[in-house]
Amino acid sequence: MNETLKTLKNIRTIHGNFTKQNISDEDLNTILQTTLRAPNAGNMQTYSIISIKDRDVMKELFAYKGSVALVFCADHNRQVAAAKQLGHNFKPNTIGWFITASTDAVLAAQTASITAQSLGIDTLFTTALYRGDFTRTKRILNLPDKYCFPIITLILGYPKSEPKYLKGRYSGKGLLHDGKYEKLNETEITEMIEQYDNLENRLGIPVLGHWEKNNKHLLDKIFSFWGNGGATESSKQLYDSLKLTGYLDAEE
Ligand SMILES: Cc1cc2nc3c(=O)[nH]c(=O)nc-3n(C[C@H](O)[C@H](O)[C@H](O)COP(=O)(O)O)c2cc1C
Image (cartoon, rainbow, N blue to C red; front, top):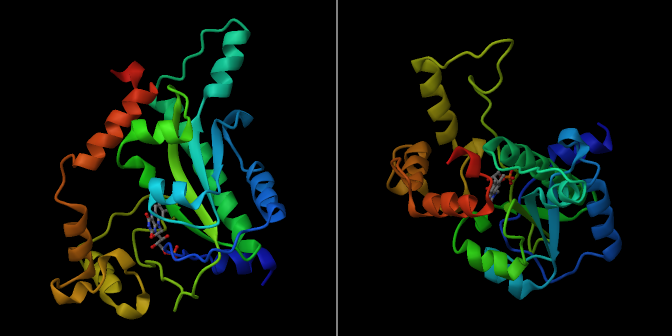
């Protein structure tokens, strides 16, 4: 197996318990420069990355602390500034521009994560900045008023202890399709639920703890944890924050 495949097959998350060890400037620079090679729509790189080394700021923003946090923002500010200087009236005020910029940002984030793991540095993704007070986030990070949204954060660091096992992945029907989409039948749905229930598959997530106590199935626990539909307070906050960025203006 080549080194790239080895890195990819061993990718895993450290859920916040990082040591105080710093990552070297050289490694951080390698991660950032490699990240910039990520594919992106029209080679416009409609994202920006904010590096945070202050652990108190990390704790305040994400509740997680590592050596460095990289905040990946969907961001059209460079394009808007260039368009203005060239006399164009370019406004990325549609959901399409937002999705494209988010895709650019997420591909860059995953490239950063893989690069870090290839260097022996561990990672944690979080969407913590979706939640809470966006005005406060904007103030702390000095985000521009429009066309910039922190879509995902990657925390980098060294783990306090090694995870006991590599988490599994669902491997049944309905995930990989050949040529056309095939919906699950009832037997396949039952098999899927059983896959989640089989502890050897390691499909649980830490935040849910011991699901067996009060739930018949792991997925019972997950769906009750996610809620029963409808806009939750945090999804309303997310929508309001997105509205502030201007990315939804054309749809209003
Ligand atoms: C969009 C996204 C958000 C995530 N948010 C969190 C988070 O807030 N806290 C956390 O501990 N893990 C978070 N994770 C990590 C996932 O829980 C983890 O990737 C998943 O359980 C699989 O585990 P593994 O990466 O160790 O294989 C997030 C991952 C993604 C892609």
